Image (cartoon, rainbow, N blue to C red; front, side):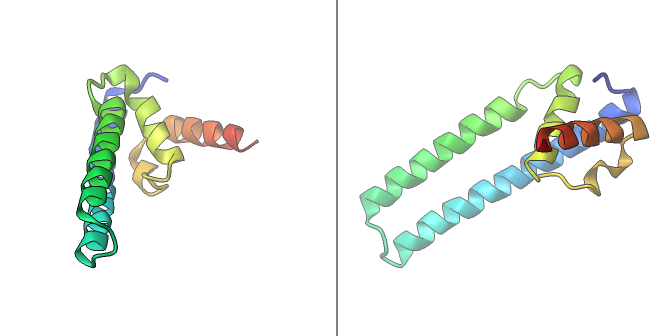
Amino acid sequence: MQLSKPDKKVARALIDKGLLIEFTRGLNESKNILDKWAKQEADTKETYHTLFGHIQKLNKHIAATYDDLGGSQYFDTVLYLFLRNILTEADIADFSEEVRAEIHRIKDFRKR
């Protein structure tokens, strides 16, 4: 779906919000890994490899989702974030009615 200029502005802000949420989730998981190590529930070598793998996986996901986005990909990216519950109904409220309706139509279709 092609977005209007105002809808692209909303989408860009939501994509930035999604990125920050994903960074936060990734850092929280990193903290959990390190907390286990700090409590001596995991050994140092295992913790290092787990943390390194987690960061690598997160980095690949972030790059695939957010790097080099053009305006033609904004709708698909926002839809992806909404379907993964990174963005909420309140987040998409600033879109035009047409965009919100399309997001809900696709979400409803996927539930079938």
